[in-house]
Image (tube, rainbow over all chains, first blue to last red; front, top):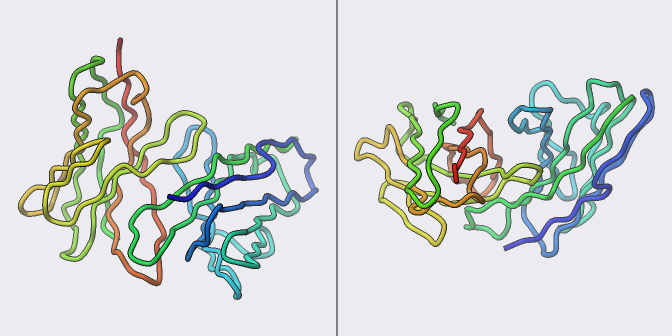
Length: 115
Length: 112
């Protein structure tokens, strides 16, 4: 299994500012992902964080708004840029482990409130 | 990836079996069925997966119909801690992509 931690666990930010969320996995993983979960809703995939190359974004999400880094096999960051109240959500990091493993693991999430 | 349909909500009594259905009528031959759950204020948790055969682990059983167009997740003796949103996801298992696309899920309430 893999244990995932996220920092910060929650934050309150002013509109127009940016926040970087960190995701640390306790073991090397092949794939890492970032999801958004708006209040009362299901999870929406933002992007796949690729190690050594640019992230792959899902429809409706762009790099300028959600830049992602993945410098190694255990760490990734998601930045929420130029925030507005609509960005208030829980942001979750996820990882898929060794090749051939079916399970995907999730962090506890970062609860972001934009005022 | 095939689309899934789940009831919005269900409830069951503590100690009884919880049977959560999922419809995936457009599933293709090499797509797997995965179940995850999300307990309030936590990240989703993997439960079980299957391709064709029924599967059982320490958490649950997964029953897949012979035509693979539907499945049922069974929690044999539900406890209050099993109250959560349960997601059924159908997906290809590929080495180059592990992404999960979540639907709206079933909100299970286990009653004392």
